[in-house]
Image 1 (tube, helix red, strand yellow):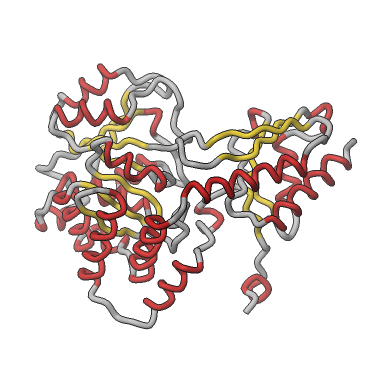
Image 2 (cartoon, one colour):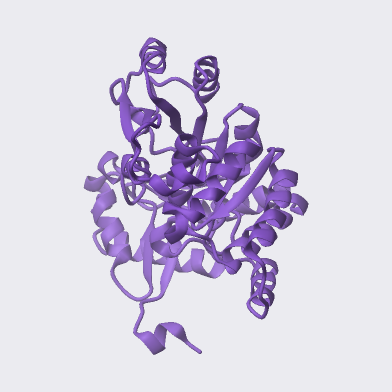
Length: 372
């Protein structure tokens, strides 16, 4: 069956990366086969989640873990867990929080929008987000002051290139201050599955990542951390989490993805990504007004991206107009265009085959040569 033809959908060449708007990731065959097998069977979901927890422990070094519908739901349910603990009565009361600690601290530079504001994910649990500092300056003294106030349920920290890159307090320091005040730390690490163990080692109490980004699985969120809080996260399925529950395909997919990651040769995977980035640079070399370079992942994950800086006077296109021209057509070519206002875009090679790289680079040459 040709899904694109049957439903009139444009084909997509993903030069952007692991993005929800592009349907997550191409699911690896080894993972897809396991998920496909699960579709033929019934499971006791509590037992399946317990089995998933054991895999998460082995893969991350955390005390426990569970699977949610996605990272966004994992954030909401983790916040809820810090307010209710393992009290079913309180779980049933949410989002009403009378009598509970309900203030959730977050550095203002971490108040990202990942498709929706993270502060809304916090409010969905019934909590009140408290933004600390300014976009590019959150002194440690401000965090200590807020931690000393009453009714603080948790601190949320975001590990993402979308956060302010300067003037904020690093995770390890936040964890130390929060724990000194008896407050748990929740980490949104949606695209940080390569760093999951390191984030757990930071002392964070709950760390959430996506199964459908670099783990290449079906859509799901993986929550790892303190056993008591994981139990409280899972308890939310009997409350506000009922509409955010993970099905068998999500749980089994996350398990299969973590099993795959534990036996994967990450060094070889990185070398393959480097080869594809080098191929992009080779195919785009020599275009007037186009400067090529390589930028490592800003969060320290083991891959890089090809960077294209454009001089509009020489190239005849700005980063913005090149992005628009590439996106126009079938297939549409979606670039990583977060920095168009700064004059450059990225071509992320991870989800592209060599043939797709050739097509993208040929299209870039056609667009830029047409104006020279």
